[in-house]
Image 1 (spheres, one colour):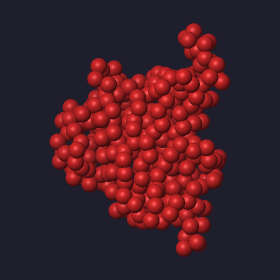
Image 2 (image 1 turned 60 degrees about the vertical axis):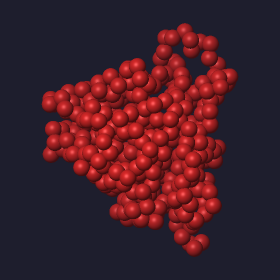
Image 3 (image 1 turned 135 degrees about the vertical axis):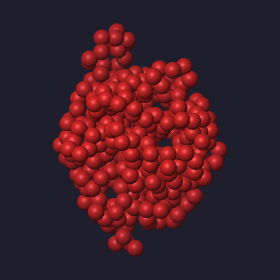
Length: 346
């Protein structure tokens, strides 16, 4: 039985429940270069290529379209003085169908294997497409789950650039964990492992880290691009871990980082006993693909709120990249309506 994701017009609340069969992953997705305007193009260009479909060893799949970007694109149009916009009619815009997928795995081990496979597949696809791959990872359980990348084959790590979703300053805990867990073993060049090292305030660290991203994006080797609507760097893949309170990175509920409207890619977070920098939600949502991972029954209610409450303002609910995938174990998924219905049928 094929378990996969594909562009769909099915509303979020109409969950497509897949078979329980465990299947191997198949051909990797094709990752086309981003065009102008973001996630949209005139209907005539041939660059509107469908994304590939990836089978996953998950039991349940929920799909919704992720093309709610028309409003943001035309909001940008209203603020843009570029005369080129005057020749674009909304009726002549075709939006690429993204995807929103929820996958539940039997346990944390299966979830960890899926995270590693996600990195492997996307890295190989991007390296084949344009010769570069940009990845951002958090710390904690997601970082530990990537230990399996030590055994990855067929990836030219010299062409992979690694950033961190958030990082304690000046401690560098996420950097150290990644190096110890898998980065040191795969032979990624030190210059490709981007860590905050400005040595200043959290605001100075954030500005310097954003500068690292922009320097990479402005290079001549096509490793990273800048989004031509919001001007933010475009990551190929961002992995996130979601906490029991719904935080992602160092974006916490009701925090200044959650409410930030500066348009910055990286923000300074100065909380009692926790000085850090974090990728902003706009930067996260500009990525080509974002995977949010959560495990354990303690997170089940938060997962339910994030995925089923339309009015949720938790940071996890604000993750809305072109392709957004939630990886859950059975405990974290246990309060989802779709999961409960499937359990009853069993």
